[in-house]
Structures are given as structure tokens and as C-alpha cells.
Image (cartoon, rainbow, N blue to C red):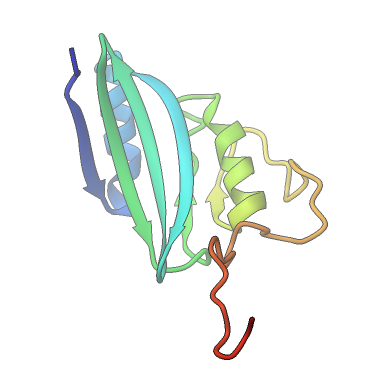
Amino acid sequence: MIEEQQLIVITPDQLQSKVEEMKQGGYRLVQIGCTQVPGSLEINYSFDKAYTFINLRIVLSSEKETLPSMSSVYLSAFLYENEIHDLYGVTFSSMAVDYQGNFYRTAVKKPFLNVMLTPEKKEGAA
């Protein structure tokens, strides 16, 4: 049986209140993930309760936008937020634990930002 999944697109201003609603509703935080799509970044906050899966999605026009940390609501959020900061450059304000860009040791800062997943062949290249 396939369980219903919801995807709710929200703005950064709605994030705090929506995540607090999830917590008060008894939902657990499953994950916070980030991916780059053409021209923007998508950050998905995934929650579960009794096999009901809900995703809150925020679309950022650039990594320069700051999001409020959800670690005051779900302490474990600081892990995801530090990861997203290090790999994509997104800043989260007021994290419970802030590694200040040192959660991962990478050779390149923000290695997942502007990465071409499928390189295009240049015209005339073999």
C-alpha cells in the first residue's frame, strides 16, 4: 500500500511556524536535504507521523539567503544545517551547534554548488 505524501512549498518567513506546527502535531524530523536546480536551491524538510510523510520545500534564489535554524525546535536539525552550509553555502542563523564551515573537510568550499551533473560536450569535441 502506498502511503500519501504531501509536498508543501513555503517561504523562508513561514519556516519557523510550519516546523513548530509539525513538532506540536507529533511529527518527527526525518531529514533536511538540499539540491541545486537551474537558477535556485531547493531545501526540503521531511517529517513523518504514523506513515504519513510531509515535505516542506523552500526555494532559494541563491545561497546568499539566510534561513533560521530549526535546531531550537528539533535539536538534530543542526547536523543537516551544518552539512547544507558546508556543501551549498546556505547560512542558517542561530544554530544550536555551529561548526562555522568546518563540519566537513573539503578541498573546495561549497563543492555541491554549481556542479554540473552531466557535463556537456563542446561542439567539435570527440
